[in-house]
Image (cartoon, rainbow, N blue to C red; front, top):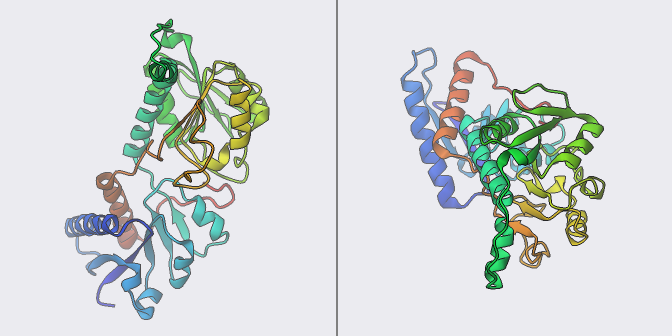
Amino acid sequence: MTQQLIPFISQLAFTEQLQWLERLNERLSKSMSSQDRSYDTPIKVVHADSLSTLERSQCEIAIVANPDPSVLTDFPCLVWVQSLWAGVERLLAEIPSPTFKIVRLIDPCLAQTMAEAVVAWSYYLHRDMPLYLTQQRCQHWQQHSVALTNQRTIGVLGLGELGLASVEKLSLNGFNVLGWSRRQKSIDNVVCLSGQDGLEQLFSASDIVVILLPLTERTAGLINRTLFSKMKPSAGLINFARGKIVHHQDLITALNEKQLSHAVLDVFVQEPLPQDDKLWQHPNITILPHISAPTNQVTACQIVCENIQNYLISGKIPRSIDLSKGY
């Protein structure tokens, strides 16, 4: 093959795919031209459907963004796949025993964007914005007392890259912060918990619970009526992880029974959320269209192209998903 072809596999809108292709190829060109000539084969990222059967059989790397996982079976010699998203649950679910490594996007910019969203929507609940929105709709003028941030406890489930950035920013804003992870961790200014007892302790003590867990067999349906029953009636929930982690019927029941006061949901089992879904109309649920931490094209392309460049020069695959853990 006269040049190294890297298929781009995606179900994004065609115009968005073109943007990604342009940015990726521009960045790859700059990255490879700045290196020594230890790797001098031209590289190009192309639409997967533009490749012939022979070309597909020669591809070692693929870049994916919301792909149809079945398309990857058309590339028998893939060594590793680079996702443009942090989450790769669908790939793991539909290709349970991949013959290639799966590399998710690890982008410090993504972590900071998520941390900003966690702080912003925590303040939304902390400063009673849902209550004032309800009052506005009823043309009702009433002031309510304002708690200080050091009087609020926020519990964060998941202490990976996204969770770590989030607890640090929450702490800087003066909140009392609890963090929960599968394995016990130690983080400055954060009370770290683990295990089932730690999970229940976090739900009981928190005024706001933020979900940033990866979706795995262990976390699917983890947040259900048992944990909702532990919450303060005034507490709120924010899910910025994956829809399947929260049992939505249990959530609706808990809200109706005043086991918690409000939920901010950015992720759902089906996206876009169907127009007839009852979550839309619940007065104590805020619906967001999966906007808590969108991938930044500029920084993502830089990281992806550096990963590709390092592999082509050294043969080293970037840190990949541990299939036994699901992340």
